[in-house]
Length: 202
Image (cartoon, rainbow, N blue to C red; front, top):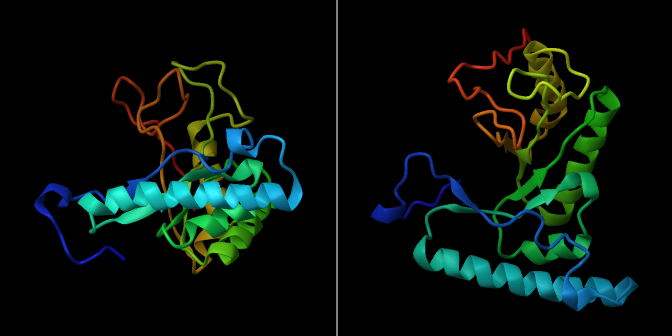
């Protein structure tokens, strides 16, 4: 999917694309939308989002035509406005969605169905931009989500992602927070450089 032309300053081994902001065209508090409802709200949101995507991607592509535009990292748990998805289509290569699924199979299926709905609107491949869970650790003893161990975390990730990897439009999952810290509360490694032993037999 990567573009064939390359410039030396962007020839990075691990660079696959550029992400924009987190939910920039999803927030209901955009100043120009205040007081609007219904079709008027949707039309103005589309106009604002279109100009935003056009402007920011134009300047990215001015300096780098070789990598993907991964778009905003939408917060799937809050729903994604259709006007924003329609606006991003001409300018963005990938639909990026952060989604924190619950622990049950029906929660994972709800996530998959939501992704499928938004993918159908955009026609774009989908990247899960963040899917996090955590358990109590030495650094964060009070961070709990009902998972009692790192092994359970691993199983939960497998269960969450299994419905998605079967879809032809799903292209991957981005892990956020490589090193565990007090701000985010999870990671693959702890601050003492030890792996967290997230594992699953599946």
